[in-house]
Image (cartoon, rainbow, N blue to C red):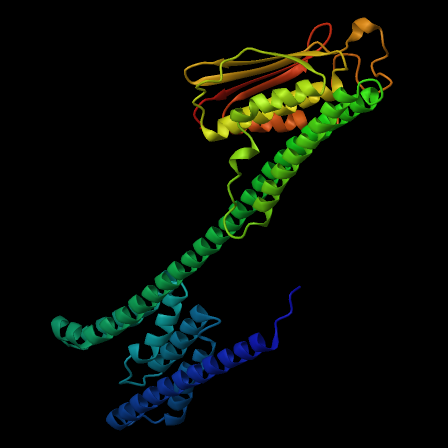
Length: 410
């Protein structure tokens, strides 16, 4: 539980003291008005029980000390004291003088309909008593009109204050909800950005490491017999490492950027880099067939980036899991509003009679090892743009990845 600090405690103490002083002043004003009215009535009618009249005056004013905590109870306590005052025959005391403040407090607290019977009962009874004493109805109405007006104004002001307080509370609630919604949206944006950066790092690092692993194995195998080919493999390793470092620097720049998230640089991925990607994978020893047209793809930037990353991750998986003698087929199908990406391979399968996992950790049942994030990342990229994604083993041997994305981003 949060403990209030010293400043908050001091502020609350000062506020309570101010309220107590205000309430005491209100009691004093009402008591003074009541006593003046009692003195005036005594002088007019020579009432004998002055001391009881003064006690009742105090009884009418004292409950106002509870006006903030118990507004309805305060009103009815004042009304009871006033009723006793009139029942004992003390004249000349206008009821609205002491009823105005508790009527305002009850209406301000939201109890207008509970407070309304009190002034209606007192003023109506006074009006009919005046008429029965012989006063003409219009004259009696004129006498009590200021009383009705004072009570009505007190209740209307209280209702207005209640409405304004409710409106202020609603505004504060809306502001709080809006702030919480902004915080939630900010957390969602941070989570989405983290996921996007994680996908970029995964695709970059996984592809680079897979390519470098295969090429380094080739270089080790050929370094004594065919040093020229080994040199080509080492050159390809160097090129792949430099490209991976460039992409990682760009991604890290996004993470470290101040203010709004930075935009990924153009070299981070796009179909303009597909020829280099195919060349690097072929240099790693994978036989790839690609015969699609790349002259005028006309893709939105998010789609262009997603298509490239799906192709990159798919070919990386072929390098890692399909086996050294696998062949891959890459195709891009262009439609008026869609582009279809398909990468399939004929990697080792159950026809080899293996147990399902080779000595080098490669699956021999046509499936890919579980536990990675490549397929999940490709699916997230496709579905984020309103596209479709499917991946799974082919019948017999091999694996296939298929994605269909809108040419214009959703």
